[in-house]
Length: 176
Image 1 (cartoon, rainbow, N blue to C red):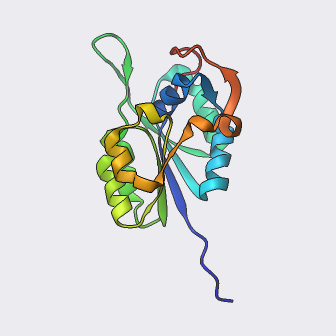
Image 2 (cartoon, rainbow, N blue to C red):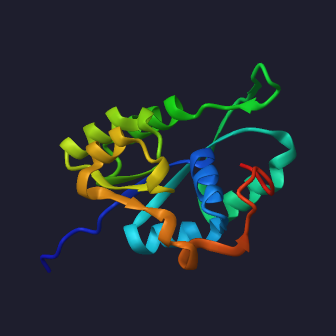
């Protein structure tokens, strides 16, 4: 039997960027539904979720793992204003390159232009399945230019991956 071998796709998710982007649209993401969506729509076998570690959110981290995400923690530190910072950009890029030979194509989930070089490399080498950006208005123009026809905006996915609740467009609720 001569058929095409099944594709092996990985997702690399900038969780804070996704959370903030979806929140700015006035709804919340259902992470369990989102993981299922990635598997069904993009054939994602392994979905890395990069997040700054804050001990009080352990229940949320458990939910991510039960949903099927591989959670990659970054130590966090307070910034000058006391806000928690856990920049995951370098960790996400490093993981994407460490696993480069393990996947056929990658799905990058962010609106952050800092991922421009990674997206360009994946695109140029036919390893980019898609870039999912939470919100067109806040998506980096560099990312839009680099991902070209492979950029997808998540703002119209509320029925597929939303949790049914509305936000007040503020930083309330469970914050990854």
